[in-house]
Image 1 (cartoon, helix red, strand yellow):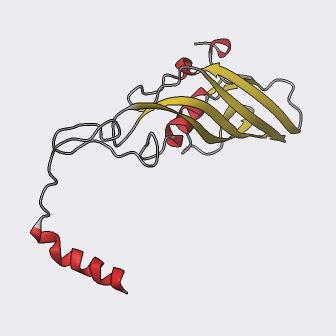
Image 2 (image 1 turned 180 degrees about the horizontal axis):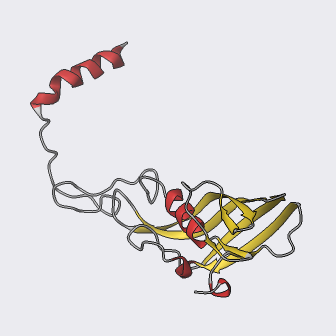
Length: 178
């Protein structure tokens, strides 16, 4: 894939010392995101500040996308806006452009361009909440029959409490009384 075919490509030719703002958009399907985690059907926006100081190039900004997620309680699909940060530091030299910090997700680097699709993909994945909920008051699924408790109630009886936890429950009861 050439630089022109990659999403979020920054042309570094002619960038002088100082700050340069860039707004980039690309379809979410070009990022090859893991569909089991999130789906981005629309556009992904990247607002970027590129700072050049001598041989140091720093690109940092915000990624925004509306993603399709699955609720961690009721397993229903829902949409949520994901916002994440991107921060890449590069150094240009006689051997070309290279990453300053090798621990970061490396962008695709050409002779005079940088494609930030890999760091943008990573930022979006890391921007997904650990436990995605369709809404804070989601009631989830019945643990016995699997009924979505947001849509209806089931006739299952609550399971009896496990007696092995009673000692801990009594400590909680004592704490609530204080």
